[in-house]
Image (cartoon, rainbow, N blue to C red):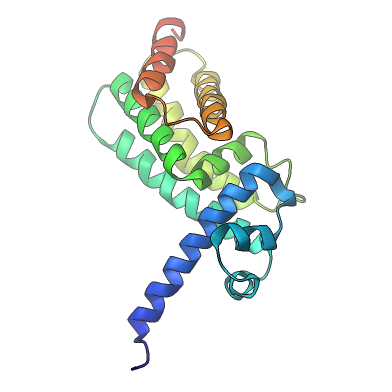
Length: 198
């Protein structure tokens, strides 16, 4: 049997990292910051040493998980608000796609939830840079679209929209329900901004 190529090793590494991060997201949703690396290894069906080979501790794992979630969420935000559509349609697309992303990638949901909770579970301003980037690249485009809609207090409306989405998604995620009609949820929330926001 010939040794693996560099490309094969990289493919295995990426697969393991994805496997570990997916397991970490599931464990974090159950246990919060008290999660243990041993639980992540068990959930990922990997050896304890394998997980430690990739991440020296749960904080390093959480760092990687949240920054990867940020990059994925940024792509979703750019896609939703980058298309030349009326702001109401952009907001509906944004809500639909972001909710769907949360149901398929729990780490992105965790990012938004932790931002919304101001990283209460994490000590010492550990994620200040992430928070700042979130404001610039994920929050401000949402506020801008709501402002273009003509809504008063666009920051307040953005907070209500995201808070409602986080709460709604949490009900399905934590109770293990099937994915709801994300388009219907987004439409209802955006309609409330359109009718009450001006």
